[in-house]
Length: 369
Image (cartoon, rainbow, N blue to C red; front, side, top):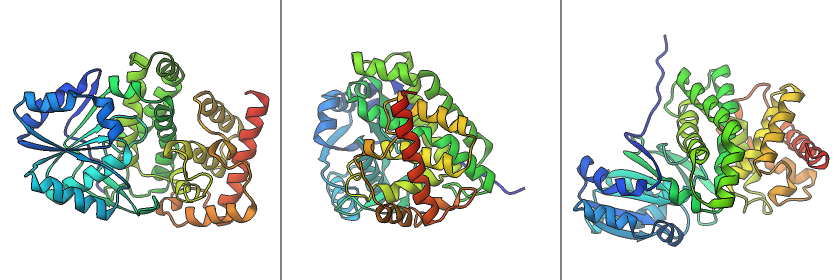
């Protein structure tokens, strides 16, 4: 039997006030000097809790101000700064690009890595993948750490105070995993460890979707009304950060994520959040899979109720001509994940599915369903 592999962070901590765990974790893992990579908004959102926890555990701390993209040049510069302070621990505090840059710094220095997302907008925290960009924000490739993060710490007090659009974007990114992992399992595609997906990856992906279907709307309403976590918020954060991350890395990706290469390059869509793009791309994937119409309509209705885009106009592109759709299709077909779908798709088929997804979404909006 062919062996299968999946990876996990060494520790996962989630809940209100979880930032207090940082100092004890660094101490337990043997770290002495922590370089905290964070943008201005992440530092403001976390207040003094990070510094207080680290210093309370007798650890030294240096803050590195994140600016720009997760690029090779940025990683080299932050690595230089962290090495100058003799940091043996990197704490990536913020959103997806900060997290990926922090991974790159830890990889360069062979340091401990603790990921602290301040928004639950992507599945990046638990994975060892680093999505590289150029200075214009264009994806240039993916590199991988030798191991998953040493710890992931999710303070839901901080996450719940962030704008709802980020919370919803994390849901949009997570909703795709059930379908993408299923395609990889069906086709015998390799996961991000170079093996066939183990069955547990599909369990994570399915549980992710089921949790969002059960608690997603309630959690979004709680975030919008109170900006504080409750049980629904906790369950959804666990789904979008932990289940989604473990599911995609151990299971693989498919057309929905391949589409982000093309959709994200369109000038009117480029400013949309990753999870918003994936939410729409998932609808196109379901149509490309030729799933039953009733199932696809139910998914579109759920996506809409969660406040996620179901049309190209909602992504910022009210009118896209045939040539632009073909270009999106061309770029999507350059992504390796595009091979992990049946029936197979090409550039023209991708453009056709985007048109069909947009038409279905517009119909749902008009009917109110």
